[in-house]
Length: 508
Image (cartoon, rainbow, N blue to C red; front, side, top):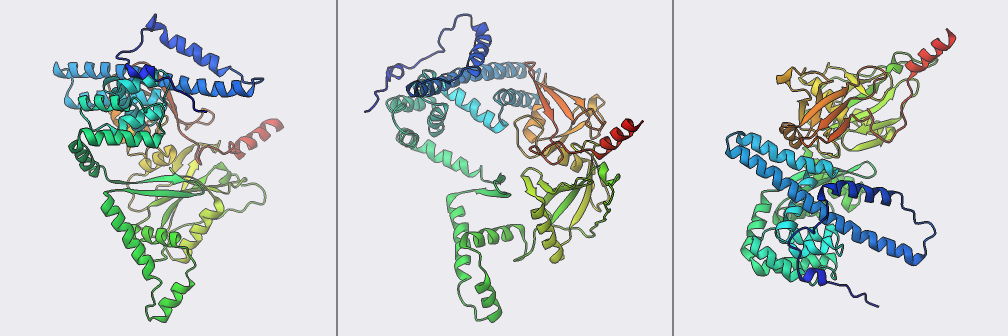
């Protein structure tokens, strides 16, 4: 049985937002809807009713995405118009105008609880739906398609002019609610090719300028290294790796080399990955990746429990290619057998020790730096500064403390260490007044009306972790709290100092 979908709402696109009585009260009405949904229960519903709930809620998600898109487009258009007007009047310089536009999009990202890049995509989608894709917007507002399907249409038609995009949207109206995601993407792409092939060629030429390399965490202590580049170049690089892999099976006539190859039990994929990483890092075959180890020290190292022996580990020498920074588990009465790679998650202590032993066996220079925590063991407060040739210990300490950009929902790597209270306004260059930001948020912080204030420094026992309140020009506030020294997901560390003091007080 095939369900017949009513597509009448997309035959005549909605040109404007529906009339809502008392639009000023819309935030309160939506908050009431959220309250109703958050307390709704499904216990006792029949199977048919449960399926109906699932379907209706999917339609509600689409409809709310439509309202969200209109609100986003209206907010961005109003803010951008204000910035443009002030810039034309000479009130803002070109840099200040750019900062203002960036701040507007940052507010959207914060409101949607996502990264700045995702926020930019949401802004682009909203503007496309409101200005160029009336049929798609009508279907979304009616709850007949999801936000993702609207994104597919916007993405595939992004290179077209306003007129051609309107025509493509009209052509896609019949299949918006019936075809699958891949079929919809194919239809939108065919419409784009048919309407303006030159625009598609220009779009692909511009894409070449966006080539880059990125790294992101993967499960089980792994990571993805991605290279985005022209298809010919990427396929050629992979072909070179494959040729090298095939050559390792060819006899060389050298008994030692041939015996070593025969003893290599790595699978094809493992060999390709190892070879690619060795060539990119400049390491010789079999050479271990150098690291710097930051050993987290609590006050337990100063107050050893009975039977605990102190130890001393040091390293001399500096690695030119040390690109991996490992944050290892702590000394103290309760030794935590764990490690943390900043920005990439946790590792079992045994894996970290195995890598360190391989470094020692290969005579690879390794740095050991002690990182001290507050009595609670949660927050990083100090670090050794004895490493030769390193001129930014304070910067490194803040990078270790913050791990990634401190703005909520932004997982971007730290690019700038910024004053929370600006230096021009008397802000000190200290651990408490510094935080790690990505380039985007460091720029957005300068937008007029945006403020940041330190609530707790994280340095005094009992006051809590380093915390900053970020306030946007619209008056919305967001709390930024430094993560625990070894990341979230672990129980609060025991504090031997606090336990010792409690014992003394109890005996008094």
